[in-house]
Image (cartoon, rainbow, N blue to C red; front, side):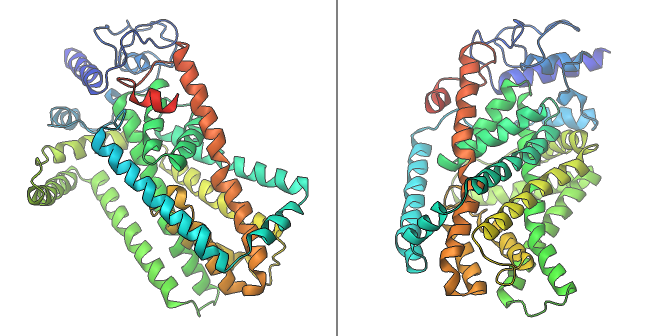
Length: 452
């Protein structure tokens, strides 16, 4: 019991030091902030903390039903203790704001993105499509078609939020949905702010710092495995059904995506099955990174092997019982956007004999990879250009207007819809914090000023 108590106190101290809360911020229920408060003491076992603040993590380690914490990890306590004693924490939380250097980088990134958008929408696409014809065609759609697209666009939020809630055990499904919509809406308009929003919401709703960052990390792993698997699956399916005259570049893209998936799975499976492999991966990665850092005259990394082992133990604890549902949730979220694309194509009066469901699926899987390229928020500009180019190559230039209508409808439901809703969710979240119903997870005022 003394050893358990020592580990419990050790983790509470780490959580406090990792991201202190604003002084005086208490979780709902009036209980003092334990995970991030300054100078507060952990509530006694069974104390009513309301279950929504970071104090719930402390209560979890003492046996109360407030929710799990990293102290519940099924991995080796020695490995967790080594990770805790490393030079850096398991995860580094996203910064609460930007320093001058990062602000300049963000401004430059935004200028570059705007330049790409202007070039694509102002010069490239007008050579292929007529905006006036597209707007006129959209205006001829009936009201029920817009309603169907709106509902279809909202449905995709449900599996995406389910994935978030599965990987952060303290989150409810509705909170996962809110976090997905908010981070997607904000990240689509302000570069690099999606992780800050997700992390802040997770912390406000009771997730300890490292549990919040672990959930963000794991959702990225599941999403990328699914995303890069889809082009491989589509090409294999086409070959199996006898469609062998695929362009060579599609086979090359599928091969690259397959190699990425295979490499990711080798690392994930190897780390999860062997502590030695995890330590070797940490040491090897640290040596290579430090070689690069020396060339750049930067400070070297330390303790990477211990951090990876600590992440491994915590990740196994989280995904051991939910990995199947997590893959299902991620796949459902991705595949439903394909359903939205098919609805848009048919509403634009493009018949199946012009662009079939199979052809649309192949194009969709390829553009899904284009959307991952972080040149513009949500791939705006590049995604539209890729869809119009590939669909035009299939259907011919005589369907240019219908293709433009389909892409506009699809992107409105899939990309644009979360933006206003996401900002409204962020506004509601900040109001709840100001009213004292949720603790403020950030030090200082940088993010509060940007998001208020």
